[in-house]
Length: 174
Ligand code: S3P
Image (cartoon, rainbow, N blue to C red; front, side):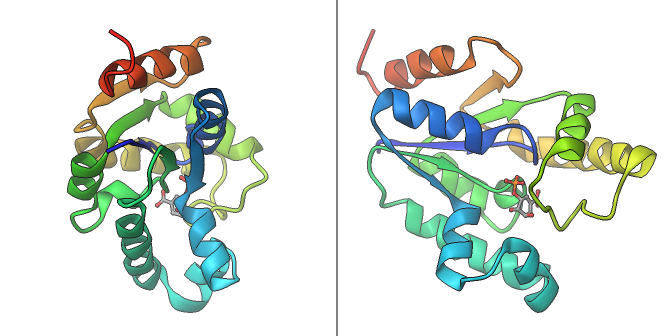
């Protein structure tokens, strides 16, 4: 099962890290939000607005299931993906699951500066955003911390460290 799943809160760098890792390892890269947007022809924000979060979560689960047949692929998931249905079991049983862990303050700062429109936080700023991130991160970590590996998302050597860990896991290097 040559698949790596990157999980973690919004803004923790799953897509950026995933792309860099894939390039370094000569693997493919996919982002589940991107697959959803391509398949539906609308943005995640529009899915939430027009069809609702529950509909989005069901579609997200289907997309996650499809990724279980991908080979040599780094898969960046949405921040909520592991936390719905039995998605975390699907992830754990079908690839190496890496949690990109980032302190809430840093997450808030990145979300605030990001161009990406995120339906769950787009109308939150300042203290409201901080409170939302702190509370939701505590809830979600009960799931995220089941990952096979927990990586410090702020490690300046992150890509190299992860590449070594992935190769060791898949038995490419000792
Ligand atoms: C979500 C995170 C988003 C996207 C959707 C819901 C979440 O992905 O899937 O807006 O529940 O945390 P990113 O983590 O890539 O921002």
